[in-house]
Length: 293
Length: 271
Image (cartoon, rainbow over all chains, first blue to last red; front, top):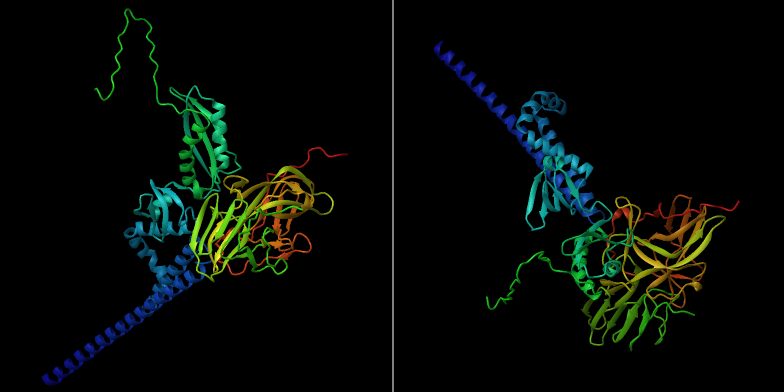
């Protein structure tokens, strides 16, 4: 009897072990199938991205094809992940049902990531900024280097690349300097009180009319902005294509001194007139050069 | 008879016309250069403010008021000078050229009317099919048609307008632009057109023409469409040959030129 019991216990144990092994084997095969599906979809996504880049990059500007490329790439990856869950009996419907509970848990855990993801989608759709645009976002100024699904990278004017989470980009005030047809170049210049305002205005207007990037319409403007302590302050304005706004401003400001000098208009140093109302005795004045001092 | 190019041709002259069958033929010294042209060693070409020189030792220099480009060209390498629409030099930001007339012109009414003006072109220097530089024979200027946020940036040029091309003065670096107007009457201050899609035409004497621009006025606005037709009979198209075009903002590529605020309708009409 004892031997029979021992034999049947052994057979049961073997059966149990066999079942466990079969289940493990089944799970391993499912994992392998899922891994194969994911790898396959990753390769597909990479292929589609490469194909999109090669076919669209020569024809479309980066701000158009890159969002499209990102959308296709991440769309295929998400489809791959959902397909990879299928061997485990998890379907899209099941995911949606489970999402009710899991979503709450995961939502709390990955609130920031999801926020960045959703903001990234809105940024890609709304396109308040594009790759290559000079912008100021959240106090960071520079050129948009990349817009991905989670973050936006800006190459600052000094060179470093700053990564800003998309949720921050979406919620901050964005100043885009090229999403307009023209941008105003404006600066002030002071001329001497003894100089002719008319001559200065005429010379500065002519300078801007000669400049290729100062638009003919809206026409350049020069006007008296202020009668300041040491000079008459003229405001100089012209509109330029946004791509060349900075170069135009630099060129005009550099040329202004020469143009005014040629027109016989003086740019004064700060000066102060002293008026002594009542002096009982003569005031001795002694001039001293810097070398002597 | 007027000359459209203030051309000086050096020893080698402009000996070969590369593309224009009708306007082809070896140019004689002192004659108007035919464009497009193949530059021979030892030759000098000047069009307006642009100058191009290929010396016998292969030194090549092309200049306009905005700068120069130099190259060393070995013997036998072709140097082609091709006229292109004036939308490239200094800034490739628009496909449009806007010609402001020196006086307003009354257009529209009954039937179609043909008017003529001048529009600038640029000289593209191609060395063995590779673009070295594009030169501006006339001053480069831009303008904005419409509002700052929604308007259209365009290359700007001011020129006279006339009912026939013979009435127009000689301005080197410009091509004749004929535009046919239909629609309600209006006083037109200028004409804008999409130059990116324009192919040049030339007559037998080498005068360049932009293709016909079809303009429609409706009292509130004017729309101009660049056709592929010659503006008059007897012109032959200029095929630029093998060129590598610059990319344009794709949204503007085939767009017609529209203008809404510049049209002034007469306030008082005769009873």
